[in-house]
Amino acid sequence: MRIALAQINSTVGDFAGNSARILARMDEARALNADLVVFPELCLCGYPPMDLLDHASFVEENRKALRRLQHAMPPGLGAVVGYVDRNRGAAGKHLANAASLLADGRILHSQAKTLLPAYDVFDESRYFEPAAERRLAHFKGERIGITICEDIWWETEPDPAGRYAVDPVRDCLDQGATLLVAPSASPYYRGKPQVRRQLLKGIGSGAGVPVVYVNMVGGNDGLLFDGQSMVTDAGGELVLQCAGFEEQLLAWDSEQPGEPVAPADDDWPAVERALGMGIADYLRKTHHERVHVSVSGGIDSALVAALAARALGPKRVTAFSLPSMYSSDGSRTDAALLCDRLGVPMHSIPIADLYTGYERALAPVFAGAAPDVTEENLQARIRGMLMMAYSNKTGSILLATGNKSELATGYSTLYGDLCGGLAPIGDLLKTEAYALARAINRDGEIIPEATLTKPPSAELRPNQTDQDSLPDYELLDQILELYVIDNLTRTEIVARGYDDATVADVLRRVGRSEYKRRQAPTILKVSARAFGTGRRFPIAREIHEAS
Image 1 (cartoon, rainbow, N blue to C red):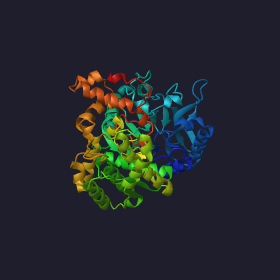
Image 2 (cartoon, rainbow, N blue to C red):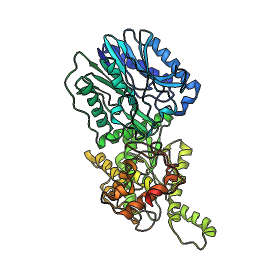
Image 3 (spheres, helix red, strand yellow):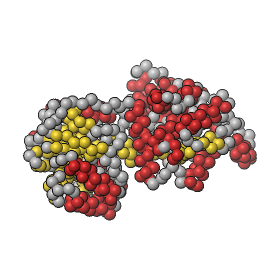
Image 4 (tube, rainbow, N blue to C red):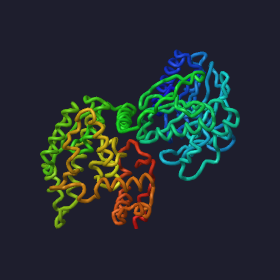
């Protein structure tokens, strides 16, 4: 059988657009003499639809779109399409996450998803009823097991809450499946492609059947889907892989399985592609044309500006320099040099006079109080006000420049540097931001070297550096990774050789900053555990882990 893998970039709720994409790929697959074309999970409605599934009209439009595809697709071609179906059982949730095999104007077979993840960013058991049974699809001599995304992850035990009761892959194999097809919407993070490859290798080598894995591509809110669809042969060897972070259709012939291929790299350039895709898709899918960013001469704003300019083109990016009385000449020069290299226009709006006006207005109510962090935050809030005013006037999206280390420890100002519609590097620790910046400079200096080598500073008071109030970032980021991503306790982190008082201070900062993160912009997820929907902690609580 000749099978086409169609990784497409669906938009949630765009039934007409998604259908057009699907039909176009069907035509391409037919031109490649494919017998079957496989599309990603829920490609017809987009993933994740979340509480749109509570709207009956959303579900019905998605089902109507499937019927239209059924009758419009090219003759002689089979297609596996993911969509939302009604649960046809007598009990349980009303909906099912399903994939159907369409051919010759008919629905030949439908299979609901069995394993419904409810960890990290997933909440599928909130909406869907799991499949009560798994049946094979018989098509052109093959017995096909349709295992939707999580259905192939049983052996990895990804759910920290416990192991699944059913193994859909084994169930299909016990019924005599000769081919496994896995429509997926698996979000990207660094290291995830290798995990998927190892998973498919284990299934193929253990089961002795090929696996056709088709993953979604594109950005939807903070989730980034990398595509990288693939085929493993009956021995578990990778024999075909689609490109990452772009739509693509490739064909594989089961009668001519081909030689093993080398997997694509998952390095810092891949992270840049992921974040660039996320920025571009956020604008396209929210119907915005432009972004702007405040460039301070520091690493974070330089990195965000570079990502935006390279993803969108410099004509769609506007930069602002907002110097205060504490901004160094070097920082102003670095910001201007960066924008010149990127080809991005930069406007300068000094804020010293505005700050003085605010000081005068607040003097009566601040009488007798010594200056403190309040005055520092006031500068950040003036900048946020100016940038949001530009958003209101022009419709441009403000990109927030905060990194994960700052968001974790509360080293960010509400209604100041937390302003914006999207936080492109909010899931990069400070040390990772430096690593990505160095990768961007790999073919020539774009981000000024001085930006990469000077001590990081918010420049909100004389001679300030971040390490005046935070541990060294190398140390801080190691502790944050162990706590936020690996979920280790204070005792476990200290047992690895870290100072107890430092660990307690970091954990306390993370806990007390939860209220700020709730008000942060959407973060593009590139780690195994990002702040946002994938990490849900209460605000009003005792920080027990630091006591």
